[in-house]
Length: 265
Image (cartoon, rainbow, N blue to C red):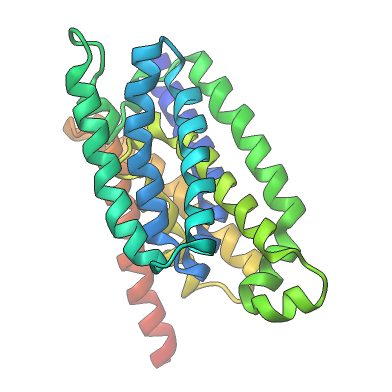
């Protein structure tokens, strides 16, 4: 009989994969991988502040990541620095700020290793409710904005001429990413969230023939990576979060081999 904590972990991992994979397609298409990492790094400071204020960590991460997403969008629009320069400054600064804030908390109130690399095996029913409730919000928003996002991703200027509010659309995408980060922290931690967004989508890119097909393949890849990672964690006593990301990387490598064989044939 499978222990309940393994079922909870599998359900949590699948829930995050169902959300992160299709959203990760836009991260790959738009070249937002660095932004995803920066947003994830900001989550550590949100966790530390949440613990200090007695607020649920997931809610604190959501609020802080949302503020960071809005601030970054404003800086990119009105600032004088390029986006990659801003991210290069903000990502390590926020991670360092989170580490410092965690060290200043009185007593051992924050599991720093769990925050950095996830603790999916400690997921409970309330965590599942948070993951699937928030996941439904992200997927509903993504389904509603899918066509405008595809149009703006293909050509932002043409989309603007057609009446699409591109700036608002970009902000909505960043906020969906912020919510996804808040959902995924418990599963893979702040250092590995970017991988869960990017690797399944990158795996699907060479195999899919349409945006919808890419989102579907990315989702299946993410779910398979979760199952493989948790299986490896159970079999060889590996840390679950890194094992999930490593499984996704293996699937990506296999997709490259399959893509080359298909191209040569």
